Image (cartoon, rainbow, N blue to C red; front, side, top):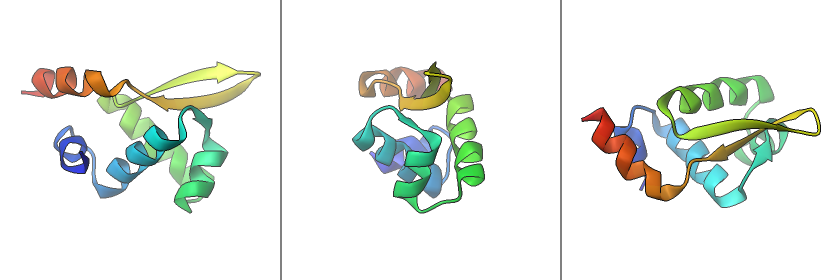
Length: 83
């Protein structure tokens, strides 16, 4: 699955972030950063890149930003749109 995500336009770290978020479910940036052992500002940049590609979605809950992966079924649609 990592190769598929990289083919959609991200790098190794972006793919690892997507897979970790897939495992964790919707989380605030601080939690994702802690699990990935990455500074929070860097994680914001990585998540914004994944959001531009269409791999993650952002929403607010209790005045806090959360990120979640798109449903795995939509990966095929993204790949077709890229081609």
